[in-house]
Image (cartoon, rainbow over all chains, first blue to last red; front, side):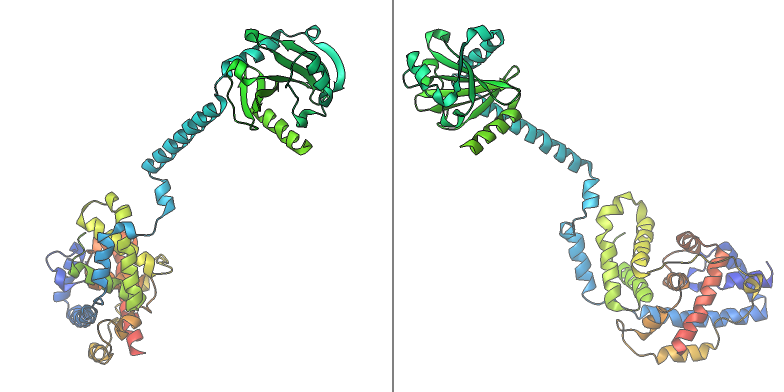
Length: 258
Length: 162
């Protein structure tokens, strides 16, 4: 080590670290003790550093800081919630997945509850018969649904009536069939320009069907979407090929027709 | 790292030397401590905890922690220039600064030093890290640390004389 190198490392000398000082700094100090100019510079540097350290040691924290930190450490939950940190937690992801699964189960249970009602098996049987139907099974008529009253009377179906909101639909054919020995009026009507639908009227007590009054209950059976409700002693049911969404949209159009 | 009153005082002094304001320094230390539960599990040992806290305090105190020192000029490295100046005058300056422990003119002037010399000199005097740890903390060689300490000593002398 020469004087120039020693001068560089001398500047990093800290007296309090004697014995645990960096090797090059310690060597520079030993070098300076043999060099009058460096020894003088080192002595003045020590004095300068001593004064500066004293000034720094005089800086004291305010009395409020220690209690403030103690509070922070004692109640980490009081910290601001950092969502970026929360989202990275595996536990949070697990909770989200569990909530989604629970929501799916509850939605499915609610939907099943909505679809199930007393007498549903009898209604499903009526829908299942549709797949074997042919046009010759129906009596060809040409009238609006509102004019079906006379035809129903002729078939001795007293008290059977089409709901008013279906009155404007054009009827293609009608028939009476008797599952389990009880009369069911079935009407084929033009639903829209391209599609047909089937309408049913039967006595609720004949088939043990119990539904809310004036409230459509939507359900599906194979490819059929159906909606049924009670109108007094009767059950009215409409069905066509489709799903629940199709039926909901169709029923919404009925409300606008009223 | 246990937050003993002694440790807390040193952390506060570091923040105060960097910010020059006691209230800001308190906020800086509290903010750094507040972060501990989130990240402390990744730390190993007492020293790592101290380094982590010092780094957080510096991040929160210094807007631009800074330039990396450009390679030293040969003349700068070899300079034998006297960097502490008139020690008696410096001593007198310190005695006449006024202020008290928390409203310190000394800290206000110290905080005007350029980075990274301000942080280097603060840690140098606080003696919380050895030179190897300081070298790692600032990503500077010992020669570069020496130059920063030298510049900062001169800067402090000038700042106090203003």
